[in-house]
Image 1 (cartoon, one colour):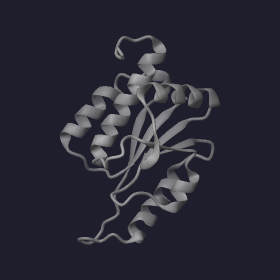
Image 2 (cartoon, helix red, strand yellow):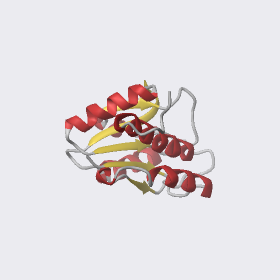
Image 3 (tube, rainbow, N blue to C red):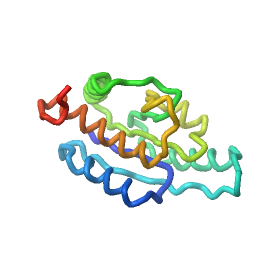
Image 4 (cartoon, rainbow, N blue to C red):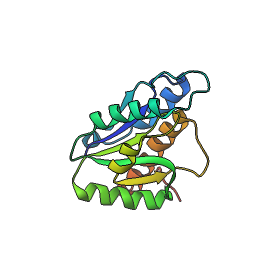
Length: 156
C-alpha cells in the first residue's frame, strides 16, 4: 500500500518541514509515503467565500486516483486513539487500495471532497494549524506502524 498526505497549502514554516521530514524518513519503503501539496487559492482579507474552497476542492478531486481510499482530516471526524489508528491502518492495508490522507485549506474542504471521503478522522476537537496537523499525522502513522511491527518507538 502506498500512502500519501495531500495538503492544501504549499508554504509552511521551516520547523514544520523539518519535523514532518524527520518522521516521513522513518517509514518503511514499501509505503512510498509522500507529501503532495496544492497551493492555497488566494483570498481577499477576511474573505471566507466558498469560491476559494470549491476551487481548492476541484484541484483535490483532480489529484485523487479512482481506486484510492480517501481519509479526510477534519475536527468533526471520528477521533482515534493511537491503538485505534493502528487498528484502522491494518484495515486500510487489508483493503489493498492506496491511501490518501487529506488536509484541506484554511476554510476547510468542499462538499465534493466530503462526499468522496471514505473515512473522516479527527486529530483533535481543537482546530490545529495545518502545518502542525501534517507533523501530527506523520508521527501518528509512524507510531501505528511501530505498534504493528514491534518497533520500540511506541512504549505504552
